[in-house]
Length: 382
Picture 1 (cartoon, rainbow, N blue to C red):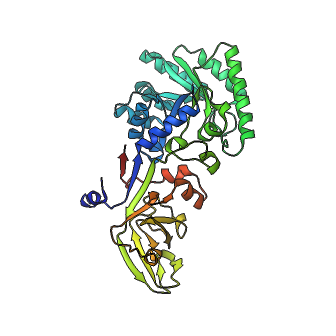
Picture 2: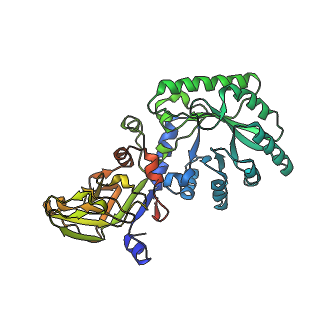
Picture 3: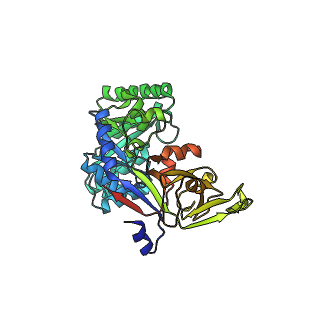
């Protein structure tokens, strides 16, 4: 799909692009980095904005067999697309969702005896045995059975005839910047796993490593890894990014829709937060906070036009934002209507990455990609 085809179809020339060959590359090098560990790729939240169905199918062709989803409905969606892979619900589910879990052959995370009992009864009624992954809270403080109750819950689940404990897992809250705390978590988690083994309970998969831990804590790889962010080509810090030659999967582009000259003293956009100090050339781009460009980027980001960085000026509005393209004219270039604008990605020798945008508004790369709205068409490249 091209900008022209978008315009002819009645849509704005603003689109995201998911490079599936980059995804396949990242999976290959991560698997080499953690040999022997099963690869569970999180594809929840529409694969962090990269397209759940296409990402899952591409990863399956790259040998990935397990995928992490957030909820039952995401699993139902993937099953409807004909995907028969192993789907692990990383979040907890309600008892009322058990019929769908059983029907669609999903693998729930569990942390409660009542849920396990209900799941066992439902599985027995359908003549099935249901695989589960037991979540242990070792410091995330979000969901999961407490460390002191973990062993008893695991043994309780092991006593159910229709339940298979396929996995036991925990999650690191700060593996990117607090390795001491993470190693403490890992030690306590391993003690629980060892206690289970001494009682004859040995789950197939023991897992803890998220993206940062895959890169910085090799002892956490265990028998399964869960690299989300790095699979899509991003890292939390420059230090972690240097560990592997990752390729960013996502790019975001638009086209200039209007170019105007403003005089000194004229303002740009809502609230008049930008006042021109000289005669300027200003380009309007049809992308705004409804598309995922947060208002926090107002007067606080750059985009690429003709291979050069140009600043966003004024406040980001719902559907549009403005760029100071005066520097292009000084370099002998002219910004015109329909010129390509790169918000995320490369143009010429310049690149604007997800990590840079996250740093500008003091957030994380995950949020930048997940903010892209459904009205931004996603185009796949392979």
